[in-house]
Image (cartoon, rainbow, N blue to C red; front, side, top):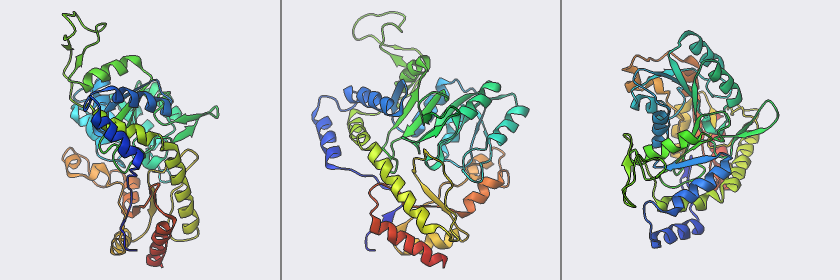
Amino acid sequence: MDNAIPYGKQNITDSDIEAVIAALKSDFLTQGPLVAQFEKEFAEYIGCKFAVAVANGTAALHLCALALNVKPGEKVITTPITFSASANCVRYCGGEVIFADIDKDSFLIDFDKVENLLKFDKEIKGIIPVDFAGNAVDLEKLRTLANQYGCWIIEDSCHSPGGYFTDSKGNKQHCGNGNFADLAIFSFHPVKHIATGEGGMITTNDAALYQRLLKLRTHGITKDPSLMTKNEGGWYMEMQELGYNYRIPDVLCALGLSQLQRAESGLEARKVIAKRYDVAFANTAIKTPKYKEGHAFHLYVIQVENRLGLYNYLKENNIYVQVHYIPVHTMPYYQNLGHKSGDFPIAEKYYENCLSIPMYPTLKEEEQNYVIEKIKEYIK
């Protein structure tokens, strides 16, 4: 096939372009009405009370850690199979990252491992689970565990807008809806379900956390008269704590709003693509993901014996796959903090064999068939 096939790809339509042009022609290029509109419509889509749009998913994680008052030396649990930002947000605040190994089938953080850590370390203050690949963490179970040990939860939902798990009462609990996690975060990087180029969102049902996030996003400044110590006029504002410039501009929110209109259709397309892979790789040496209802299919991760060989073979045939993820605890930065290879054998075994193959809504059936053909060709 002549055209390269990437593992993930944004879909920019004429409607997206028109929305961005309209924003460029408006009076607001940075902070304008589209930011609030994007927050409102995204909150409605996810099913939460409040949403705060920010510069990117990493900024979202950092602001969450700040809002929950992570202090130097405090310990927070997360998974080693994630992008490093899930752990780094704790380090930005001077906290200590504690990793818990993953479940061998779901690739999600293993609750039994989490509980073992909580039992023996009373200094752990929070847990950051990751809805890896679009597979929703059962936050109802994790909330019960977190409450038992007095921990907060930040749900890293970057892979799972539209994803959900089914709770003990049979209800669908959508990722980021705030019913069990204190805060949740999303990313709008180009390969994600909703793309704004760079961008992120924090969701919550906690009004106090919401108000603090709004301040932290904008230098720690508020213009809300009800929150200020005094008011000297329409120009007056107060910097009440040390915050950051983690804002997202109107022009990117215009793109996000347009993309949001196609979120459900994009999710359905991902499910169709996943099903084709399932059928194609059944009864082969290729290990396909085990997933339950509610998976959002940001990634389709296979496991093979000779990962490097397959990676190179696909690249030679114009198919650009990816690895998600190099275990965070094996990165030099975290090894310098005392973590080492061998600490989390399930995560490390997963890493040796994992490969994310093309998964995006505009992947054509003939392109997918070509990917399947080349994978099978190499495996044989």
